[in-house]
View 1 (spheres, rainbow, N blue to C red):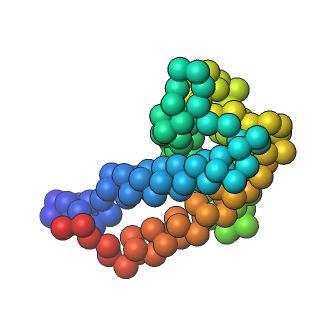
View 2 (cartoon, helix red, strand yellow):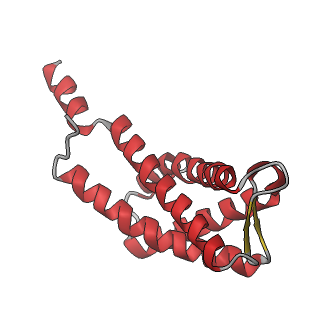
Length: 151
């Protein structure tokens, strides 16, 4: 019995889920903000009823939830395959997930406040988010493997 408790405290998957959520959310917020700042006619934040800051928070959080909640399904897919996804495969999968997530969020711009001018902007946002999220999540994984503890 003590071995089970010890293994649970070492992994603490709930804390890693939280850290992953916060890291991806911050990346989404920053990318949406900078995208709107540099390309305001291609990436529109806010509506008549939703201020710009709320649009960043709503759309970034929605995309983060979509992305993070699919992580356990990728783990299950890896378990069924019997092998881990390579970094190139993981990049492709998250590019697809980000692209679909951005497309879904922008289709409901009256609720989330994020709009894009065309599908090419969705693809470019997905590429940028994929690259930055990949780099940050690799650092989070290194921290996890090295025994990162908050307390």
